[in-house]
Image 1 (spheres, rainbow, N blue to C red):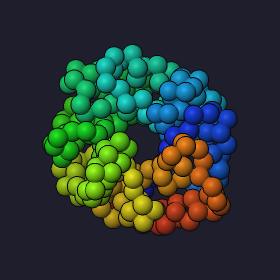
Image 2: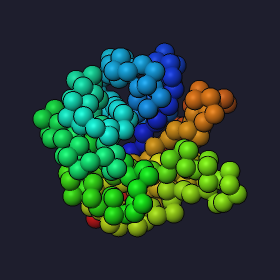
Image 3: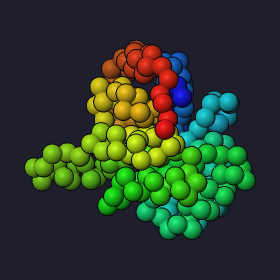
Image 4: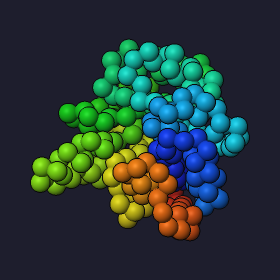
Length: 233
């Protein structure tokens, strides 16, 4: 499949999120993500506003579902999401419920392995349960906490090849990637590239980063799209 660039709108104000999304779309981004901070601040209204403002554009609702899987996926789908996120550390029945809702409402399910002791096995498990995509994810608190104790900051790149080789569905790497690492994701066999904190969003304040963001995003999108086809096993 061809690489897909997704921008994570990890903002807490819907007006700023829509402004950022419009800029990202001009720069060549393919998918929009209603990030967890945006959903916490604006709820379903944020998803609806994105859908109204960008008809036809895929919208990922990153609610990080842990329970009540069918209802949460149904609500996000009805609000206009095309993709929903369920956590691998949720109960098996929750993941099955989200997958069932995905089938019933025509939305794709992204399974997130954040916090799993065996991230490769978790990716396999998510695929076995019917998820359409795997999010290989090193969390914000995990990265900062480990680094604060003087250890090497973990990165999704560390096990990305192993995760990609373990599954037959597309993989997305998330969590503290540098610009160079994000651009390299397709070369690891991970075609879904997410740009968010700290790439395009100020990770400390969860506000749009300063500088000529649109020009930078355009260059990043061009480099990622130029990779060509990514082979999915």
